[in-house]
Amino acid sequence: MRRKLLDAVCSHMRGMGGILLILGLSCLSPAALADDALAAKTKANFLFNFTKFVEWPDLVNDTLHICVVGAEPIVNLLSELASRDTKGHLLQIWSGVDDPRICHILYIDHKVPELSALMQQVHGNQVLTVSDAESFSGQRGCIRFYSENEQIKLEINPEAVRNAGLKMNALLLEIARIVH
Image 1 (tube, one colour):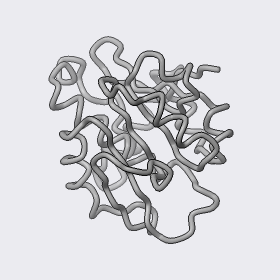
Image 2 (image 1 turned 90 degrees about the vertical axis):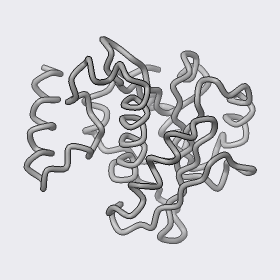
Image 3 (image 1 turned 180 degrees about the vertical axis):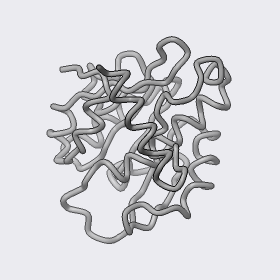
């Protein structure tokens, strides 16, 4: 069932002007994702496309801030995508951040020792928190990237998303592993 849905989404995305990046889904071959550069590209595509599948109800202006802590290759890739359409929003990419509460999407690499402190700083704010750290869901993180069969997949904590005051498109929940 999940594979059928994933295939249908991938097929639909190819039909939308050839945009396979809509979710950065696991439509890539497993061998291709073994490469760190391609894994970074997949994560960057996911982060970019979360702007299309998540709503920030209290968005004050038309600018969405994606902050990346500890993963410079992802920052560089996101900068290349920043000119693409994000549902009418301007996109600003930040490498590191002094005040993570300005972020709409905050990606924290698993190697960053301040992960817990950053999570505490954004708690109660409309920030979609994302990481590839193993314990991330247990720290009230919204979305965790994990690897399975050499593919990048999503683990979503719907309660953390609700607690952040965000609205998530059901399509994301359909393709993710749900945790509580």
